[in-house]
Amino acid sequence: MEKKANVKKALVITGGYCDTEGLGHPDAGDYDLVIAADSGLDTAEKLGIQADIIVGDFDSLGRVPGDRVTEKEAQVIQLPCEKDVTDTMFACSCAAERGCREITILGGTGGRADHTLSNVFYLESLRERGIRAEIADGRNRIRLAVDETVTITNDGGYFSVFALDSCIVSASGCKYPTRELRLLRKEPFAVSNEVKGKRAYVKVEGKAVLITSKK
Image 1 (cartoon, helix red, strand yellow):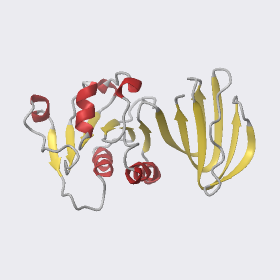
Image 2 (cartoon, helix red, strand yellow; image 1 turned 30 degrees about the horizontal axis):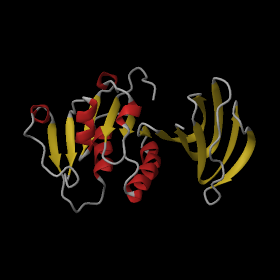
Image 3 (spheres, helix red, strand yellow; image 1 turned 180 degrees about the vertical axis):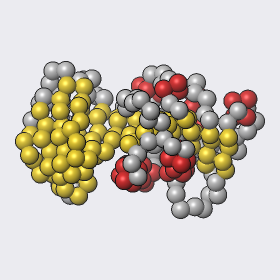
């Protein structure tokens, strides 16, 4: 996600699958706020990233943070195990309350399918609150496209488009170009397209989940 002037950005590091080698070395300096959600604290430490806030019920982390030097420098918010939102959702709400309007969620896929779906669907809720968010796990990038054209650069992987209910999609610069193709949520066939040349363009009329994946 490109950094825009005067737009506060947050990095939310979650548990679940995360290919830290595939992510490279994210620069915490690109973000105004870094939040680790539960076992996302382990991922943050692997990436060498200091969290400003640590949230969660800490069931998957297996301990309450605070003993390590880097943890003492962060605000720790312990949540009850029984609650109406996931740790990731709470972390994103914390970022929103602190004025962040762009959120990158690291991890949050793989492992438990219910948490993966929860995170993907939550992108729509965030967008309705005026917040652009995406999920990145080192192999996949998941974002929501709403009445817009998205540019996809060629990294040798695939991209797929999934309708949230129904939408119209036009795609150019790709192996399987389309023109005003209607997609339905119940018929998810727009999978594994590929960029030809340097970049492809995907125009979405309506709402769609756009996923780019490494081979």
